[in-house]
Length: 228
Image (cartoon, rainbow, N blue to C red; front, side):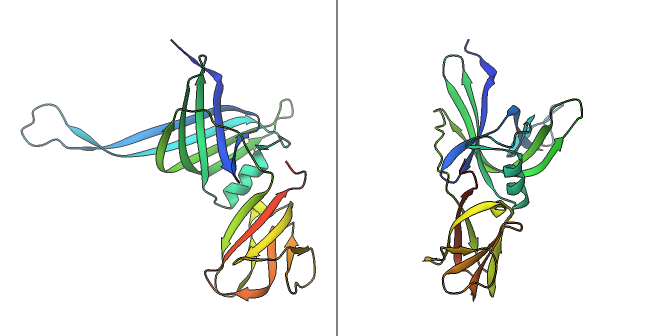
C-alpha cells in the first residue's frame, strides 16, 4: 500500500503564467460536500430515498508567517488578493511514497484570513477558501515555472482615468496598456501628459492623461520591488 505523507501534500496557486507555492504552509485542507434531496414516494415503506443535487467545496491553509519567500506567495500576497476579491486557480496535490500524484484543481475565493502573534511563540496564519465552479482531477505533477513579471487587467467605466487595486501597492510598474496603446513613461507625482501614467505606490493606483469610455480594456505589467 502506497501512502501519502503529510509533507507530500502541497498547495499551488496559478499566478501570472506559472504555479507558485504558499510560503511556510504547514497544513492544508480540502473539504468537498454533496447536497441531497429526499426522493421518497408514498408507499415506499420504512426507508427513505435520496438523490444528489450539487457539490460545494471549501479549503484552508495554515502555517507560519513568512514575508520573504522566493517565488512563493505569502500572507501579504494573499491578503492583497482577498481585498481585490480576486478569483484564484489552485491545486491541492498529493504525492505518495512511490511517486504517484493525485491533484484537485479548482477556482477559489479567499473568504477569510487571519494571523496571530504570540509573545512566546512564532506568528502563524490561517487562510479560508471558498470554491466556485467544478473540480478537475489531475494525475501528473505540477511544474513550478514563473515569470517575475505579472499582469493585472481592468475594464473601464465611463469617464474613468484612474485604476486602483491593492495588488499594485508597493510594486514596480513596467507598463500600462490602454486598448493596445502603451503608457510606459511612469511618473510618481504631478499630472500625466502624452504617454505618461502616474503611479501611487501607497494606494496602488494608476492614472492616465485622458478619461475613457466604458468597456475599454486596460492592463498593467508589474513586478515585486525585489524581482521575486
